[in-house]
Length: 498
Image (tube, rainbow, N blue to C red; front, side, top):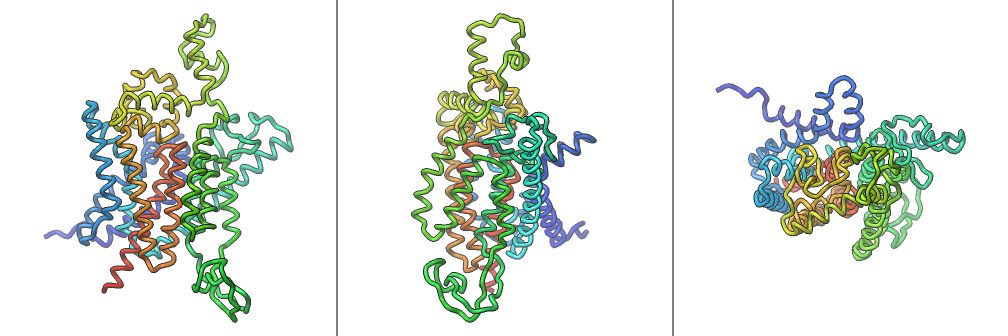
């Protein structure tokens, strides 16, 4: 019998190496694509799909490893994914959609959550998580320093040199639309990422986990008063003990300052709202009722911020719109034409897209029009006929964003109320799984990780009000952290039972 080309151990090591590398590449993915497409469109396109290719290749290997170890593949997470997939397939078939488009549309909904299983089966030691997280902290610090430099140069150019925002040579930022890149007089720094929103959310993700995981212990060489939390005998801030010496845990405030600065200079309304919640959750992390009550104003605030028409991305003049609308510059515009132009110039894209999605949903309230048919990247690639049916006027904007720039309206239009509730059920299942893991583990570090991930579930709910699912830097990394934590927790249980 011929020996396999790669032993199981070698295959696992290669897989772990790649899964570590891709975590580092994802925040820089779009910048790398922009550089490489100058030489090769094929290679740049391949890199832009690295996250999807990784999931497709390694998910079968993960299932194989689960089977070999006779492990249950986290049924609390798996069942909601299966239900969402089956429902999406039923919706597509009832609407008479292409099987390929339906499958790709379903994959678009669940792909980032499949990452949990990849990292859970291949990363079994929490030391591996800490090593990977340390690399990502270093990367995020680097991105934060670059963002600060971008912010400083933009502010210096605008307010000291007094350059017009259209004339500023923006540092390491491409395809700048000046009107969209400033808010409240502050430059929305993207660092090396393709969007200030994604940079802000990614930095917030790293900041949250950094806050909630206890840092490495450090000996206090002198006596003094310390909170009981530091010596493990009580809750923080309740009582103070005099000790002759104790092992304390100190957060590196330089790292913390850079991470906070990264969120601030992104000037992302969603990241700001998420940061407010994360700070509250961290301060009151032992008071669950206060955290739950705080959700109501945070979600309301995020909804208002997500739909706030701060700027108009669509242009405001007849000349600007003539090419997009198909109207000639010298044509006499009828009342109907004026209505079209008024609708475009007076309503920002996000609100227009939301209204169209609601219109589609009203006609298909329970099942939607099917996955991959409205609002997502699959619908754009395959030129869904739904856009023509509903007279979606702003296709030129949608083709640029490849998204409605808000998830929940897309979900309602594509998979209806039942599908949207199924997706909410998936998030609730994730929250429950994280909560149970935090309660069951004896490791303070794993407990801290899953407490942070619970807080991030709420941030994701806020994030989906203003963005879509195609944000691998945030969602892929979030799921990778969850997977490594679940794998480490199971590994600890296995060792304790030996």
